[in-house]
Length: 166
Image (tube, rainbow, N blue to C red):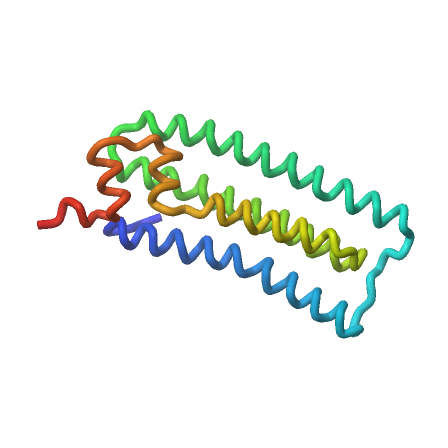
């Protein structure tokens, strides 16, 4: 990602994260509306199949998000050892984007589960994934924590470059 200032960096990262957050929300709300209005009906009516999906989808998602989180943290540790804030931030963006995309895909999977079954538990699962997504939001504090920034680099990121302007 090309950026000329830290404000622009966070602006671009926030925009990408916002799109990745809103996409599954729009899809889920559309499915919710279509199911409630009766335009479409759930595809799966067998209670055993609904229970299998209701239990297997969250387990699959928990495994997926855990793997993504662990791999991201490992890559963040490697990046934190680099020299230069610009290089660290340049390498941070694709990893963070991958983490946000994973949350988007698994929330779309919950929307699919809701569409297939019409079961209310998928709404709860979807909400939990959105909370996880917001917990992973790429704020300056999150970037500093992920990259283990200290001193001037931390101050620079926390103030988005304003601390060292004359």
